[in-house]
Image (cartoon, rainbow, N blue to C red):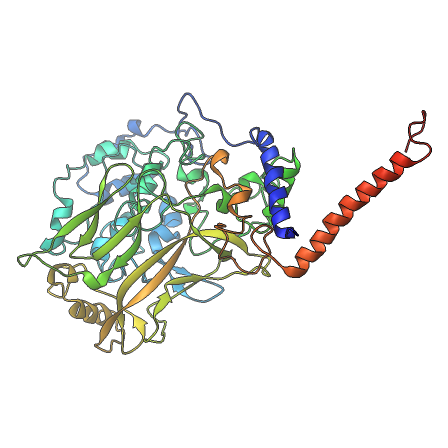
Length: 551
């Protein structure tokens, strides 16, 4: 029986790495800490001012902008710096594709669009009062300093406009905010500050990303080795380093393959890649296994091995959404149903009249593909075949031949959402508002679309349908400890390989090629034969057993 070279190679790799597992125990994954260290918020540590002593922050304050004026009284350049970042502009132009991106313009396959719904969606804008196109982006007193810097945990944001009565119950029972107290508490951003919005993207806890949930507010090291409170206790800004209020790392500008590593001393401090801290050879070369793992870095993103599952930590993520079923009522009123109990015991809604049906999942493996960091978005200006079975909201590019590409993990989101059947475009829906065209009140999708498109002078045929859309979310958080990382057998196997769908690369153990099998078998047999012949020659040679000879 002739064994395939793929199977042999796979077996040898697994045996090699199993034998080397002891060596990996000494690799520098952060160990658990007995005492919780302070949260690390980037290179700035300690600080030089105690804000509880500032007379300017004693108040009283009647509004958030009054607090901002006090902040800018000392931090005189902060407003100018902040108004340049995407947390303020919600706008980004891709220099390579020319596409106008940013939350201010894009359509997603969760709540569909923030444009026209700013009264609700701009709760997560780092400013005050954005409810329509009249918002003044040049007024620095509109900046919300507290949402990023307060540390009491009592600050919160509400919609910038009232909305329909159908949604008012979402914000009942909130206690009043003591603005003077939260103003005096300011410090460097903590995970809870960033998480207030980033953990709740898409309309709820971990709904959108799959690797960003409230489980990361105070996570154990086993959930994330960097953010674990019993480990390094990193805040988000430890990696997303800030320079003049501009943060490293972006969904729109992903560095899929960092070829520079840590850089020289004093360089690259504001880069948010794994390599910017761990270098281009992250595994200490103390064994052949480590050497081979470092070789994988050329083609495999660190996240592929070190984030084995999506939505860990007890908080599920949405994996599908069906707007076709939205709008059902009981006795003329909207309702919701709970149908999923997630790992932490909380119930999740699986139906809402205002949004339709959802499905959730947790602790599931990502999808994998070649990724060069470039995503192509289907925007409000993109036309497609209206008879298409599905379209990608944000397709990604990359290939084995592209030196900028590596195999990355992704969360895939499937949604049925409204589109313009006549023009073959996605649509803006007018969901939030006090008027009779707002869908979250009248449940009339046609009326909502007509208003959403008309508000921005966009063409609408008047005929809408529902199309299946796919979005892809690069997974880069919830980094597991090394002992939970993928092993060789997870990919180098003929059945059930994690990378079964990845094309363009020959993976020993997963793949078979007749000629490679023959050549490999001959090489292995030839090597073994040569060793055998050499041994026999030495054994039967006349000098065998004589003393004092060396070969």
